[in-house]
Image 1 (tube, rainbow, N blue to C red):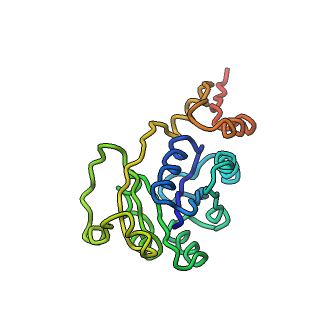
Image 2: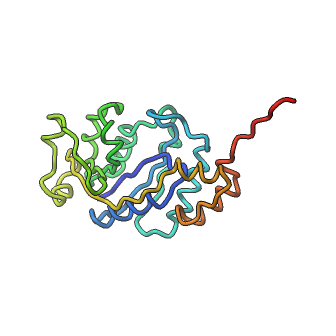
Image 3: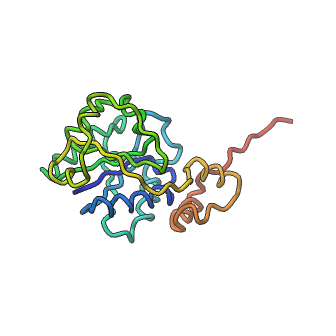
Length: 213
């Protein structure tokens, strides 16, 4: 099975990386593709250019077996719709089962995604949840797609929904950006190689306001 884990990764941090590793192992994935989003449809475009976010992601996972960074959304014009990404992946991998991993917060807004029902034409959806997660009331469309067990996902190429609890590291990219802007050290929240790139490119620096005399 192949997994897909998307995001702006602005910057990538240990919260992303730990959950990615856990789902790779739990679902015995042949490969997990981390896909940085060029132009997110549901939020503002990141202030850090896509090619630098790609560099940070590549630096973070370079030594992790089974992880690969996939740049297809960066090479595609227009908003980065996940349905287009899964469609292009499906054309490449044939009938191999494909798993789309999304966080519980993103899943809560799934029905606002572009052509969201078609996601299940191309992949299974795995919702990564935190301990104590209160399940949402599901539409009939989603209710009838819940997988009976994890093994079922490997027996068909797409179309099922399941929930998987993962370790919740209380790290956020927003908090890291604010920490760096305040001149504080983000060490131990994200890989040292990513911190080096943040410093080299002077990312997340505070805005300097010039006041007139």
